[in-house]
Length: 420
Ligand code: AMP
Ligand code: GLY
Image 1: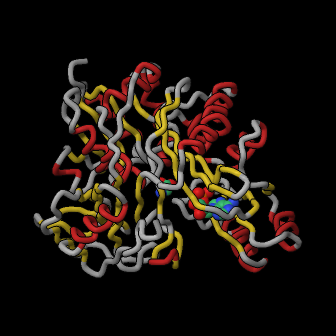
Image 2: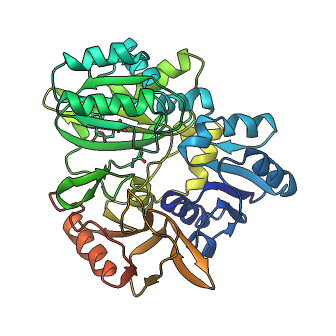
Image 3: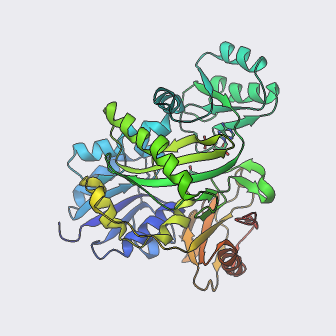
């Protein structure tokens, strides 16, 4: 199709970064985004559909025959088979099918895949029976890590220092279904120490091409204090992820993962995310995600020089091997401005003011327009990204921009990339 229109599914900072990158493509027609937000609305046409409204999405596509590509960004619709459904209806969709997205949606599945294929990861046990899990944590070595098997909005992992914490985590997942996914299964694994790094990659199931590495900051407050969040900031690339580590990970982690999925008839096409820990005895996988990370994407995509739509086409046409993907050699720092109270309860509808941000880019996450004014509409409100010659330079720029932005009652971490 000549210049296809595109529908992006999702409405956060990650989707704003994706829309912004697609907008630059000379190959793209009109861009729609469901459910969008106040910032995305300035670059794309917002569509009032929830990411879980598969029927509504199909109906929207039926009414918009010029849409030649649907980009499914968030984890839940991928796990629930939106790409499968779209393909069955003859639509071109970017993102893994459910049978491949399961590497994120089930930790039990991904741990087993790693074990069977000798992909380095933490030692673990899985339990579906509460009594057995309880017995295990009462006699285990600490710290240990309890993980909900299923999707849990990034909140399914608890690092436990003593049995009381482990018992609470087991009760939440196995007895009280606090994540509401009706999945009582848990993975209990060895606690790893080291530096974390995320590596995202495009893959068409045959070739895998990594993006610059990045590092998320998951805790709410400065100094890695406070509760776990969806992510409070990121930088890219990580100065600790060396070309030697990359070569090792390609051979022992990235390719074996893709090949194992192929052998199982679960070919992965899309963006695969490797959450890694650089341990004293080598790199190990903490988790897989089946999509672009949030907020890593807001740091990584601004470094992309190649047309994102050209990459998407190469993935869908299984021609990724023929494409040279170019990245800027600059460094990106992204800081998330969150609502007061996040990741706990927070108020919505509070004013957001964005002043002069220089060359920085402000990706909107939880915002909407009310009477023509931007107001808060979620826990993570804005993601501000600066590019610099190094982390210090990018940090200076991003925090200078943040001085001219205000989210009423909100907060952001002042130490994104500081240790580096
Ligand atoms: P996950 O959702 O599996 O990435 O876990 C969320 C966060 O929990 C990770 O980014 C790590 O900071 C931490 N984590 C997960 N698994 C482990 C582990 N085995 N050892 C230490 N930290 C872990
Ligand atoms: N920032 C981590 C994630 O997207 O899962």
